[in-house]
Length: 183
Image (tube, rainbow, N blue to C red; front, side, top):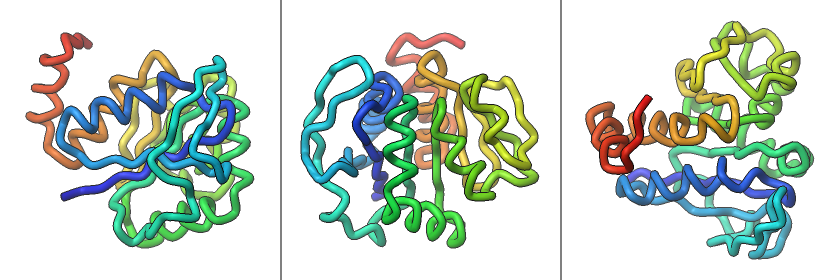
C-alpha cells in the first residue's frame, strides 16, 4: 500500500493540509500527518490546532512514497527551516519519488532548484520563487514526480491529483463525484 507523509509547521494553512489528508484517506491511501515542531499538536494559520499522527523524529522515511507540503506563509517558513525535512525532500526528488506542495510551499522546491524546466504553479505572490520553472495559472501541475498547486481554493484539485497518481484517474474522478466536486 502506498504511504504519504504530510508535514505541518506552526502557521500551516488548515484547508490545504487537511483536505489532502481527508481525500487521501477516503481513497484508501495511508497518509500520516507529521509535525516538524517536535510536538504532536500544531496550530494552523487560523488558530485551529490539530493533533498529528507523528513527529518528524519518529519517521522512517524509507516507508513513504510521497512527501506533501501544505502552505501558509508561516507554515512554509517553518517547513523550509527544518533541515531534516529539506534533506528528505532532496533525497525523494533525487530518487524519483513523489513530492508535492501547495500555495506558498512550492517556493521551497524553487529555492532548491527542483522546478528548473518544469511546469509549476503556486500562490500568485510566490510565483517569483519558482526558480527556473515554466509558471502557470493552472490549479495543479504534475511534472514528472513533482506536484504543485496554487492555494486554498485549489486544495481539492491538489488532493485529487495525488489520488490520481496512486489510484488512477478513474479513482480520482469517482472520488470527485462522491464528494460532489465539479470542476
